[in-house]
Image (tube, rainbow, N blue to C red):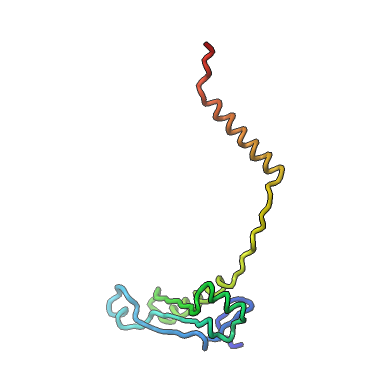
Length: 138
């Protein structure tokens, strides 16, 4: 594997040849610099046609991010820095898509937790009962 591969996680490295970069002028204020310099970077990764993904990885990324994963960055004045940020965010987005959440297994409350809950309710009830007006006995 080459050094210029995009490292997503321990099991996935994407060659830079599979990532398309596009440059454009950044919008908004900034005067002549913003109007002339193509510092905005848009990176695109075609997950559906990528040979570096396993079938499971491809299905997972396509279902969560779509067939084409696109990141656009125009935060800094430097095109090189925006390229780094875009690649980093693309890797983060792909890594997040590949994370498998643990399935939640339903559990029952323990006897101790039930007792603590009822004790707390009793203490709260006693506290509130001391705030009431005394009962008249006539």
